[in-house]
Image (cartoon, rainbow, N blue to C red):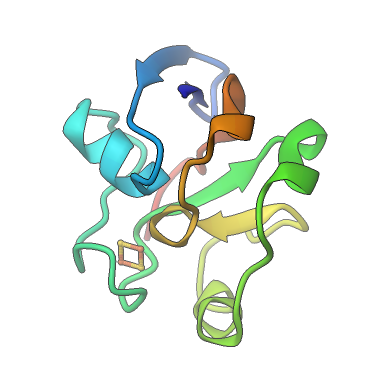
Amino acid sequence: PLIIFKSHDGETKEVHAETGTSIMQAAVDNGIDGILGECGGCCSCATCHCYVDPAWVAKVSPADSTEADMLECVLEPKETSRLSCQVTLTDEMDGIIIGMPKSQY
Ligand code: FES
């Protein structure tokens, strides 16, 4: 599926990734600056914070309790905040828009 990453200042970058990959991995593999993913995807660093575009939220499975706890320590949380390592790409997410915070910490 296609992912459109959108930086805090509105700059977009399109990336293609395999179904089953996490959004964090797709970002890291494609050199997206706004997502760090320091723990490698084990939901313990919260440096992969992103905002799922409201139009796409319904296509994304909700956060589990571990992720929800970690989301309490991100900067500038929003309703649509997620840890991108916990969002696995499905075919239905083709064209998903992922916003990124100004900073991960
Ligand atoms: Fe560390 Fe997502 S990569 S919490």
